[in-house]
Image 1: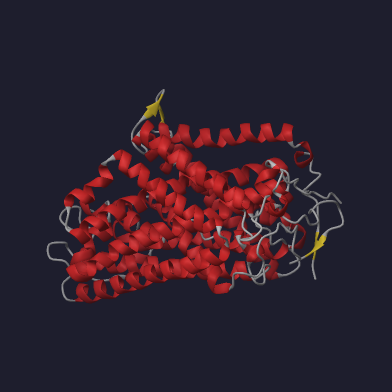
Image 2 (image 1 turned 135 degrees about the vertical axis):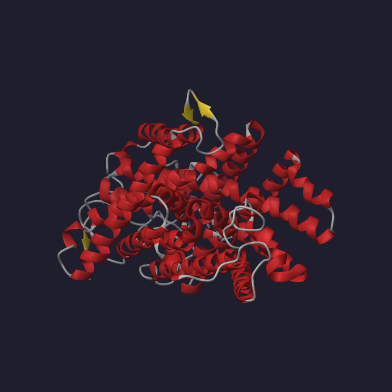
Length: 532
């Protein structure tokens, strides 16, 4: 067995994760057994708390207000069908996460599992995909939170000048940095602080969303929004085969996959969850059910109320599509309650900004504990039992990235966000394939094993890999994203592929610094899993 213990710096003895047994060698381990102890606060999150973290990270209200319009632009009245189709690969991949978590409840999730299945290099790149995707989305969430903060202040005060402050680049960036610092501070204080904040913010989101859906349905039955071309419900809206073209379907599918991303945050806190082998997987599935139900109900309600027209207040109108809830707040809820939707979007972005620090910090912690990153990131705060160094590093990286991109070029920032889908499909699909390969010797044990460890993850991985390839092809076109290009190649393609290649460069640098991990001496691909 290989034993790894990060060495503390001067005065930092208490901030070191407890060194447990490395998952290596050939002796194997029993399913559900806790892996290396990293010093995190075990048993601090239950099923409800874990589910809330998954829902919060996805940011359903923010996703809906920014995605309803564009999806209608691609799929028309089949928007609910596209949301349902986007749920399928995520559900199938969620089964892979659940099965892998049962075997190895490690906060490194995708990184740890793919190292065991495919070896150090593939695992390192899978971890890099998760980390860089999270940094990108944290930047975006901070920007959205800032925009809605000033929009809400302007509405409450009736001052257009306050609402316009978001257009001042310096004010916008400074406010973003404040939001990032606040979210980092809450995450730094550990799961207890995180859980308390999230119950309030997620509860507010879902309550306002339920109110919006109920009132939109009620008003749609009485005629809907005047001049919008409101529609009567049809079951054909749920049929993906009714989408006008395959290109429109895949474009809409890319948007809907983004809407579900983040549920795996439930798994990254598995070492801090009660029943770490089973509870996180159940929480992920519960979060997915809540999300797909919320998305379908909101899509149908908004479509019935406002219609899908490209002019006036319809969902297809560009003025509405940019921010659906801002456009429909007063028509659906009225002036008195309409402000609640602005509060809900701000709460959604702020809540997701805070919880999205969880997966990146814990992935970095695991990579450091297994010597795939510098050992300093394995330090755990002695009081809060959180990966303090990794959390602060993620906050600093997010702030520097967003500020730098904002002042360098707004087009670059927009294109970086468009490249996010590539990263999501990259590490989700690899994790799904890792599940199949990891459990390959068990697939004939039972029908259940064949389905949940083989067929379902393989299908989900293939679907996401297909979206990855299609997105890669589309990104080549300069028209994708902001419309900018580098030597005739779309900027989104250059950024997306460039970020993956940056991961390859960093991996090679770490290989020279930490050869033991890359030789397979710390975390091996051949360690067997012995069933209870």
